[in-house]
Image 1 (tube, one colour):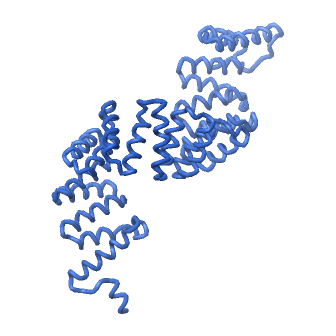
Image 2 (cartoon, rainbow, N blue to C red):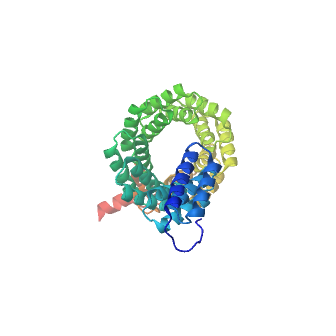
Image 3 (cartoon, helix red, strand yellow):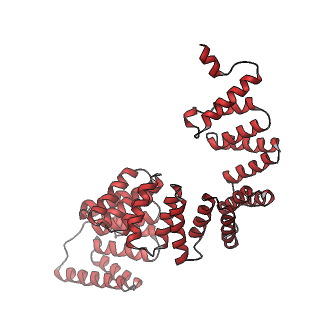
Length: 388
């Protein structure tokens, strides 16, 4: 950091000339990747002018080159204590905060950069990225991306950032539109193709998604995201044998991929290969907790009539994920199929409200009410309501 040499003094003309020459030499050395030489020039400046901002910024950049972000940040902040609007120090500090994962403070610094420099597509994109990563202000992040795109409609970083933000907010159709714009700018980009495929897949447009993933795989045949996307689209298009073949191809390269192990188990279960499905689910769970692998195991236990084991597994899942409607409906299935419709009805009526249940579940509940009412020798609720 700058030396504690008391108040600043006015430099003589010869000293000013020396500082300017050292500063130019330091930044030239940095540009030429002569980092230690640059550090020497900047240190020499501080011998003459202990409060010199160019030297502080230069030494901050030296520390970045050395990978020492904490020390770099101290130099930039030291400069900002004296010159709060020093653009180079603001930018350096923002980059350090970003690299350290301090996205909130990074966003504040990028915002100050914009205030000093004026609206600039690159700065606005950096600001939007930091806001998006912080997760605290997606609306402001979207605003900054759109401002950047007004200034530079073809800015690839702004387009990808905006699409990612929309995707993370479950706005898949809008995300697909933005990634389509990016795809038109860089049709060979595999990451854009797989991202666009992901958006279509979430929209359940498996045919469009499959085209994207296949195009990505043509350009990068071993790309795991493209292969997984193709496999999952085949599953969505009911080609379970084709899906399983691709899932197993991925597992030959990445045998501990928990998500793919679970998907392979799902494909096997659909094809009636229960022992093989069980093996895949068990491998997935050996890697770590996976809700869908647990549900798959419960599904096999139900098919095999092992009601107690299925109930125990699903009850444990309900404790772990109490608001998960998929778990609740699977447990209700277990109760109903094992001859306990009263318990199935009770668990389906228990959630915060039937409005939250999946399509078709209200009809299922009414059907259970009628069956339970008949079994108990009393009219169903529907009949009660008709007589009132």
